[in-house]
Length: 184
Image 1: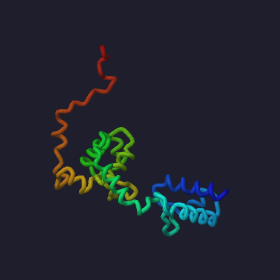
Image 2: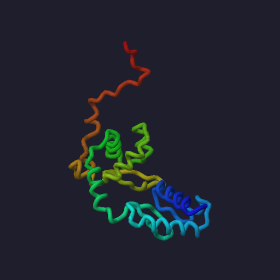
Image 3: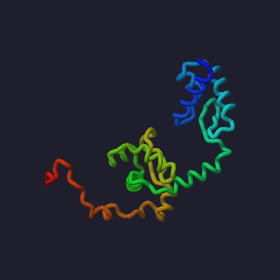
Image 4: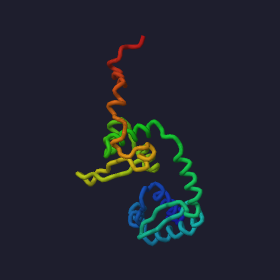
């Protein structure tokens, strides 16, 4: 395999990975010798040292990151993005988490009836929710609201949220489609 192809494959793997990737993982995925991987990584570092995306290396683990020289621009962009209004899906997910916290992703998706991965990630990036561990099962990740959420809502405690029963008592839930009379 030529060096350009190997560089391209390494960059693609690092781009899709949500966590640092070890050299061993790259060796296994690319079925390539460690020496060739290290050589390609060195080329990536030298080629991209002034790019907007750089390669971070620590303890034989690699990850793509934004260039620290660009942090003022990135921070300004993210601040503008954070000021955007929350979508209906984000508000719905946030309400589920606020009233059921701590709550698992599976519970959120069961209540909403749709995949909520992207929405949960978006709320975490905005600092409105955070992960917390389960006291009964270490494998389960639960979600809860943050102090940032409480500040935005003007609450001192999650117990100060409006009473769910009071809010929803005047809402009429539509009948399932099979039980509704036919339209005329």
